[in-house]
Amino acid sequence: MFRERGIVIHAEDCLNDYWADRLTGKTGEGLHLNVVGVHPAGGHDAHQTMEAAIRMLSTPEWAKFASRMDKAGIAVEFEMHALSWMLERDKFATHPHWFRMDETGSRTPKFNCCASEPEVLDYIRERACALAKIFVPDTNKYYFWIDDVASAGCQCEKCRSLTPADQCMILTNAIAEGLEAGRPGAKQSYLAYCATLTPPKIAPRHNVFLEYAPIQRDHDAPLADPASEKNAGQITPLPALLQYFEAAGCLADAKVLDYWMDNSLFSGWKLPPKEFHLREAVCRADAAMYRELGFDAVTSFGCYLGQNYAELYGDTELAVYDGILMGK
Image (tube, rainbow, N blue to C red):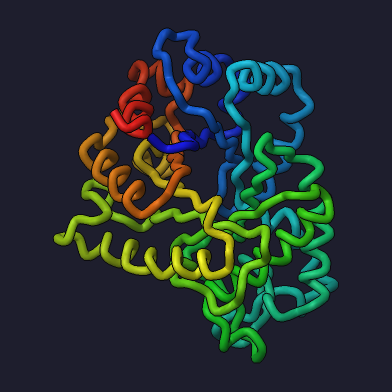
């Protein structure tokens, strides 16, 4: 059994009773999930979905959802691609040197920023501090990720020797420092995802922890399947990542963010959702592997499985996923 057993849902799915009913047992499933992650959708418009989520926090519907989670002993967290909110893209007009240089040698406001510019790191710290007071997780663990793109590092003279993982850790450390200024004891995740799966050379701050998210995996085969080249590329860096965080004394909060229940992915991130069925054998094999590696916190995206999905297809196999995380 994993200590933390979670599901990540879109922010708008907190505004009706469907997920709250399932998570709190009102539908009679008797689930044991104890963490729900609230996720404003990523992509190019992540800053806009974040603004919508901020507005949501002041609604009576959100207050009702948060109260029901609290009474059920389910911790609420927030997971989001937050960099384009923390560093507004319109700053490019006055501060182009804050933004990344692309492969042609031109500065661009598209995706992420320059990781070697002290001014922009200071600005990100300030914005992270402000954001920490808006989204307040029950666990004091934050998931304010860089932009939602496979690889978009800065190629300026100072940054080009840094790997995407190095640049991500520099930005993550700046976010973590800002969070701690706004919320003492706050911790920030380093999202090991796409180009940031390999261990950085930059040391993490004391309040940074690993979040492993193998999105580029073969979702129809267990991660440890020796016949899957795709999965080998996702899992090969994992032991070194774990060693890196252990050496830094930051391994205790290591977490898996997988995609077993992510119908937004399986629907191509387009509505209406496609019919979904949990790949139970894959999820079970992966959970066993994660336990063997020492992970004690596991969650999955569960987007596009809310009320609109249920109206089309009925309920999903959430209880089966719950049982696997419980070790059944």
